Image (cartoon, rainbow, N blue to C red; front, side):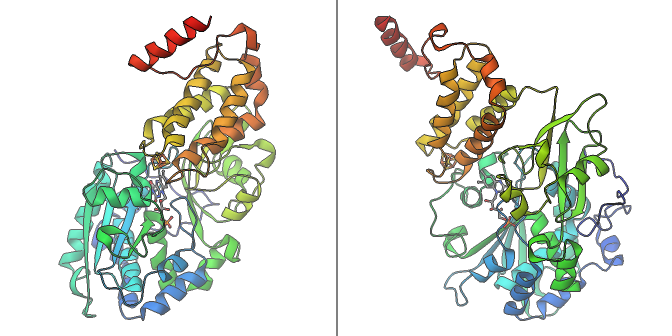
Length: 453
Ligand SMILES: Cc1cc2nc3c(=O)[nH]c(=O)nc-3n(C[C@H](O)[C@H](O)[C@H](O)COP(=O)(O)O)c2cc1C
Ligand code: SF4
């Protein structure tokens, strides 16, 4: 089911979502009526380096999570590659709290295709993929329909826009694993293998899909490109705060304990409390905000005193968190932070691909220890053990899923330790903390423990 279409809030600035509320906005005639595919026509006639420079100068940064400057990333593609160059659109959208890419694919799939034509021209790619989370049935349907329309119009295929350039786009359905959103896990899955991240380097720009130089970009990142090509880098910068740090707009997915949750397109640099109070209507009646994850469930939480932070990558990083995929999960004073920690850890334990010990064991350890505390079976020492486990999980694995669990957990314990301590028994009141192990190994550990007593 698609979400109900709402008119824009006066504080919103719709650029990627322009035309979102038009009837049949996902069809080619409606998109073209609003000036659609002008940027693609222009891009195929431009020199690749000029395209890259325009995007570099605009300040556009990757909106999938890491915030890497898009033009700079495109510039890493070798100028004279010996293998085909691939463009891959990451439409896995697995980060809890994030629900923005889906809106673009369901309502404005042609903007994404147009962005991909521009990006492919910049990196000299003739083959592109859109890797869409399998559960997003409507997104898949609408994107496939839009690709078919674009082929018929001569915007995809051979000699597009009679420019001499070629571009094929294929939709690949994912199977719904969070780790397949990590770019190298995604590439593995695209190639037909198990979605397990690869060691980097080599980075995908040098050796990615099928061994060829590859750019992986998020749906929203690519959908921002037509605006930049049509209107120029300076226009894009001025949409936000007018500096490279605050360039453009971005989609905010807001969920949790807030009056009007939803997705909103706002200028980069808008203070978080303006988004939460003015656009989203503030807390639920009789409640107070307590904290939020500002960039999806993998971001360290912010307390309310930090809600004045401008929503740009650098300002949120200066507060010790990250803007990630732009998903704000709001927590009010009715919530237990221990339960929230347990749920966060449970998600990452379930989604770990299992290649790295600190991640595979650490996420499960954090989950089981937090669950013990939540059920009144944990001690104060367990709180320190969780922090210690997290310290051994961050920065030590093939990909950052392990960090994605450790970062929010350590931030919650640091900022809300009293909630954990209230639930903890004194150390001599609880049985020795053992990891939750089942099967033969569990029986063995139990036997050892019984013998020790
Ligand atoms: C565990 C994990 C999951 C990720 N999931 C997504 C995702 O669902 N969508 C996405 O665009 N990026 C995701 N990323 C980030 C991608 O690896 C990659 O940085 C991004 O697609 C690059 O696009 P961008 O430069 O346009 O942001 C994930 C990263 C990690 C470590
Ligand atoms: S950190 Fe976790 S998810 Fe990432 S490769 Fe290692 S085990 Fe897999």
